[in-house]
Image (tube, rainbow, N blue to C red; front, top):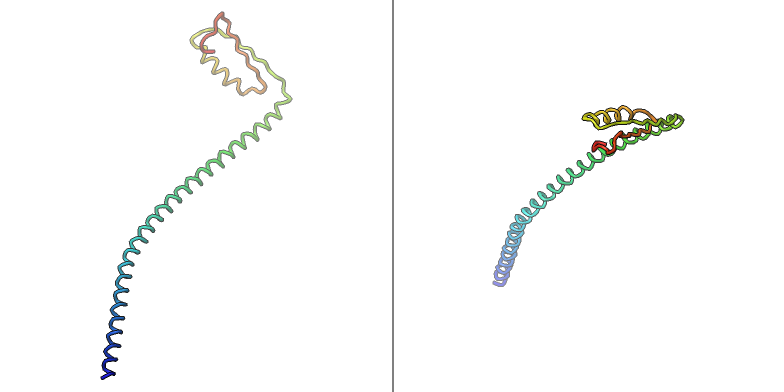
Amino acid sequence: MLNEKLIIKIICAVGLFFIAQVGVFWTQLQNLDEKKFMLVAEIDTLIRKRDELNKKIWMQEKEAYRMEEKLQRIDNLVRDRILLAEVRKDLPFIYFITPTYRRPTQKADLIRLAQTLAHVPNLYWIVVEDANDTSPFI
């Protein structure tokens, strides 16, 4: 009799333990679904941030490449100008005086002449208007 009561108590205790374990497992299983949903949302957020950062990196690399190209062009121009200045420093100065007067083609003529004279080294160009009042073009 005592053995039977003890066996029943042990079976009831094991049964209650098993039921408690199933309950704990069930609540953890429900929490896993919530955790999974939160992890998926966090993964999506991180993927979006990664894509934005990759785009930002790409834009900065593109800008760095442009700046390097611009630096190379400027460096070449400066190097050419320095060499040109050294060659031209022994050349004499030329003072070019242009008298002009008001006419319809005055501005166009002076622009063409300026573009031509821009290629002459060590040139100082002086434009003198032969009139009492200066025209608005000069």
